[in-house]
Image 1 (cartoon, one colour):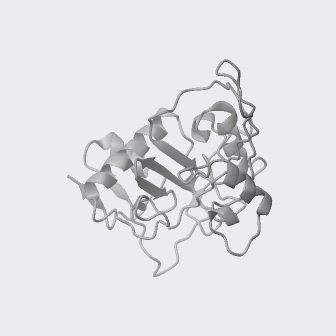
Image 2 (cartoon, one colour; image 1 turned 90 degrees about the vertical axis):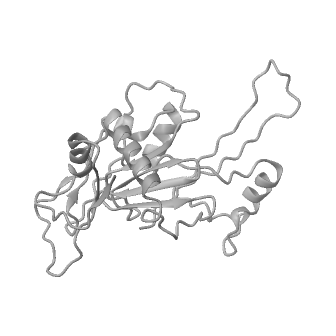
Image 3 (cartoon, one colour; image 1 turned 90 degrees about the horizontal axis):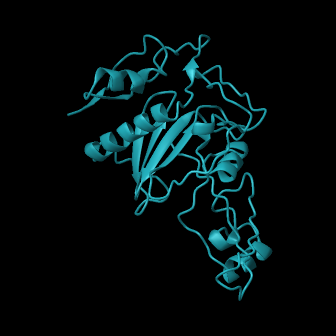
Length: 250
């Protein structure tokens, strides 16, 4: 599983020489459908972006920046409100309604409106992602949480989770979930608690889905801490999902 890293390059063109009492003049440029390695200033050797490169040379090049969602509309909503898209229940691109008949889940219900906008302070908190849809860029239903250098990703179709050390593995190529079970448990619990706290909408079982004969068994993680938590970790999976390959945290 490779998660989509949607980075919105920020070019800050601030007025030089303003006093401490005056406000800086900031131009915020947000680009849709732009990955972090699509620009020459971030190492792309095939695409020429000379104007943006010049802005980067004169300003700040961010290397730890994330968009709140892998598609455009929820990202813009998060910038406008300071809230996670899951809290707003605006988790899909506007007018988006893709489904996949070969998937065991259907996308979550969502609100294509921005309601109750109020800025909140999220400094020094974990970063969460929630995308219970099939995107126009072929992204699939998944969620994630990052705390410090570690990022946990959960597939909403299979329930599988993966853990990455972004400090040493920015490309997310080595899954550490089996080597670091305690860290995996810690982040997974955090993700479950956050989804519950924001009333995040989850995918629903796809009644048209039929597992192919001989296909790989669905694997997912459960915790031993409480019945409620175990139920919340599997509630989005189809009925009668075979519970094989369970990883029990103790």
